[in-house]
Length: 67
View 1 (tube, rainbow, N blue to C red):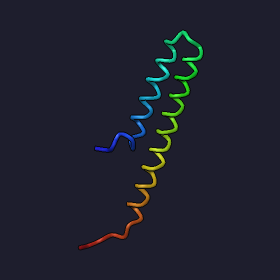
View 2 (view 1 turned 180 degrees about the horizontal axis):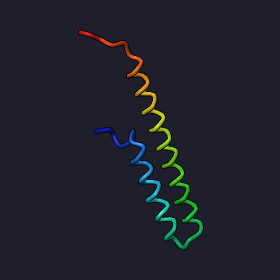
View 3 (view 1 turned 120 degrees about the horizontal axis):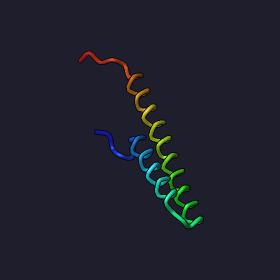
């Protein structure tokens, strides 16, 4: 089971939740702040996706061990 901070889907879900909350807000400043939170979550998702790709590349680059 992957750690949540390494799971891009976790952060994408959090971003969608933040956008949904923003849509329901009537205060324009609060709405903009919540949309900012959603953007941060999207960046975390991108970082997690990038890190996952790096990890997969490292594993694939390892020499095979027969022992």
